[in-house]
Structures are given as C-alpha cells and as structure tokens.
Length: 301
Ligand SMILES: Nc1nc2c(ncn2[C@@H]2O[C@H](COP(=O)(O)OP(=O)(O)OP(=O)(O)O)[C@@H](O)[C@H]2O)c(=O)[nH]1
Ligand SMILES: [Mg+2]
Ligand SMILES: [Zn+2]
Image 1 (cartoon, helix red, strand yellow):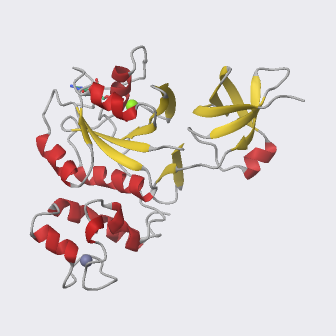
Image 2: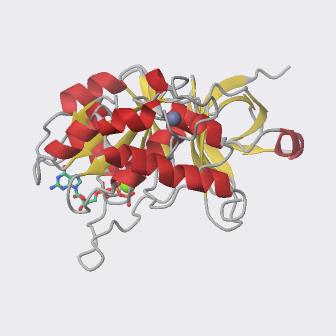
Image 3: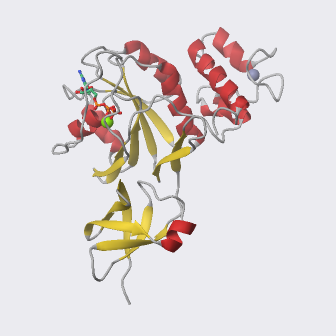
C-alpha cells in the first residue's frame, strides 16, 4: 500500500504543478481520471498525491472541495481564468501614480472579490511618490480597510504583514502597481521579477505572467499578473448592489422592491449619494458594472 500525501498547489509548472507537502516541495501531474473529473487545478488547491515509486513525479489523485475560487473573465470568448482557490482575502494593490490609479478598475476587482464572498482590502502602494490621500479617503468611505505602503521605503509594511499573517491572501491589481515588489519587500530573500513601468504608455509591462503561491507568516500569499480587464460573470444584476459594502445597509429601503438605483423615485441609494453618504463615483462604478451585467452574455462569455 502506497501512502498518499496531502499538498497545496503553489504554481503551475509546465505540464504539471509545484506542490508543497509535509515532505517538502514536489512536482506533480494530473492523470487521466483526475484530469477528466477534477475541476481545473489551480494555485491554492488542496490535493492528494500518490508518490511515484520510480521517478520523482507525483500524481494528483484528488482535489479537495474549495472554500472559495477567485476567477476572472476575459473578453470575447476567451473564457474564464481561475486565479486561485481557498483564498480568504483579496488585497487590491494600486499605485497612486506611475501608473495613475483607475478607480473603476479598483471597484471592479473589489466587486469580483465580494461576489466570490472573499473579504477584500485596498493597498495603496508607492506612497513615497504620492501620498494618495484622496484615494485612501474614497476607499475608506466605501467601507474598505486601506493599507498605505511603499515597497521602496518600507513604509506601511508592518501593518500589511500583520493583516496577511496566518491567512491565504491574493494580491491583485493593475500591472505596474508594485505587487511583486511588495511581496519581495515583505519577505526578505524573495526575488520575484519586477519590471519598470513603460515610459511611453505609462502602464505596467505585465512582468508577472502566472499566479504563484508562497508560504508566508503561517499562511500563504499569491502574486498574480496585473490586468487591466476583468469581466463580471455570473453576477446577477440584482446582486450587484450588495457587492458595494456602503450600499448594503440601505438595500431594501427603496420605494420599489426591484429598484435598480438608477433613476427611480424614492431610491434610498440615490438619496444617500445626494446627501454625501455615498460617493458619486462609486455610484458611477455601480452603474457601469450594472450595464455590463445586464448586457451579458454578448460581450463577456
Ligand atoms: N517609487 C516606487 N516604485 C515602486 C514601488 N513598488 C514598486 N515600484 C516600481 O514599480 C515598477 C513595477 O513594479 P512590479 O512589482 O513589477 O509591479 P507588479 O504590480 O508586480 O506588475 P505586474 O507583474 O506587471 O502585474 C517597478 O519598477 C518597481 O521598482 C514603490 O513603493 N515605490
Ligand atoms: Mg508582478
Ligand atoms: Zn434604489
């Protein structure tokens, strides 16, 4: 009888996976049956492995049910891209300059986390270049925890490390925001590749190309490639408002039960925007994303 081994998938590695086990890191592959039955294996998956008595390659025989799955959709028939499984917290990393923040992209990533029932927080990086005070105020007002960091000077890293310790976290956000730089700064000895922001386009250069999980302070951290496009999929237009934390206490208080919070009379959310409780640009993000969820599935499949 061969002893099976439990592991956590750290990275895709060519046709196989790099998996952390109690006996150290091993390489593993999917075989016929699991390839057919298992959900696509992703970083963060808990798997059962069968050691190969001859070579060094293990076989994945089972994938445990996931507590969460973070995935993104890509436009025009290119399908979904699972990013990571079993994640507790998504940290949306943005710089406040170089590249300039795109609040609607931040909101989109926050909504994706909320819709997957994964806690989300915002990291404003590169505070050595620009204090980013307005962005912090905006995100706090929406109900998010905000961490201000500089991978360059080390500012704010103690707080961020504290928030990540003992959990399984994903860092996501636009290319060039400094996700890999932050992880390198958080974990001395780590040498993730980082890349300068293009001087011509003022965008990141997609230096990180695939998700990579690292053991960190009793938990795990996942570095992801930056992206500038993320689709909302499977989110019902009616569910969208509850993906905005500051809208939640008011949902159900509109005059009409099926209020879309666009221009309906007696809308509690619109009233909250008018009296300054909700930021107008958060409502704008909601409207933009509402159009998109209502337009499905033509543009995002
Ligand atoms: N001034 C300053 N520059 C930073 C900071 N963090 C990262 N950078 C620089 O920003 C550029 C992009 O950093 P990366 O860490 O590669 O960004 P990323 O978010 O991982 O980008 P992708 O992998 O493309 O998604 C690099 O030139 C870094 O040196 C920071 O806190 N301050
Ligand atoms: Mg990177
Ligand atoms: Zn309403």
